[in-house]
Image 1 (cartoon, rainbow, N blue to C red):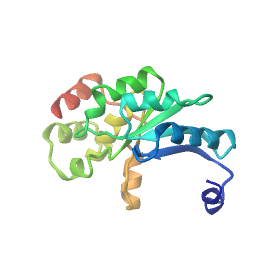
Image 2: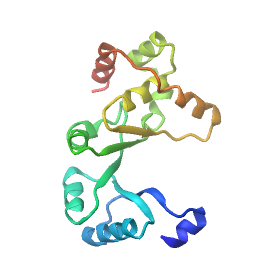
Image 3: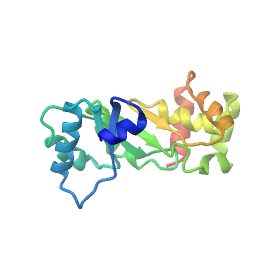
Length: 177
């Protein structure tokens, strides 16, 4: 961790995420190492990626002084599996879902989904803006859309600062079930 911080020219990172469960290493050992990183000041908070509710609970049980604050998971209008039990659990336990691929791995901007297109037109927004807004409008959810195109990055920023009415949000949600 020290070498990584030196390469980043940082004293610490705000959030250290374990990326994917590693069944080759005991979870207890991983959590103890992460807790050590917090105690040494290398990171302020710890989280996980792609963990189920059961795995989050098990991981948390190995932490003595710290709290897992986030789980990064694929989540979008077309990838809504986390809505079944993961997101409700994270909301109930005041943890954050960090949504990766919030544009459905690029499917949403490329395809002509009637309801999504109509709602975008109604709000004078683009399809990606509406899709991102749907994701981040949910309690305890943030999104990390990927783009190397600066124009797309600017477009993504206009996904926040406005909200759909409840009826449109429900219609959008139901149209992708």
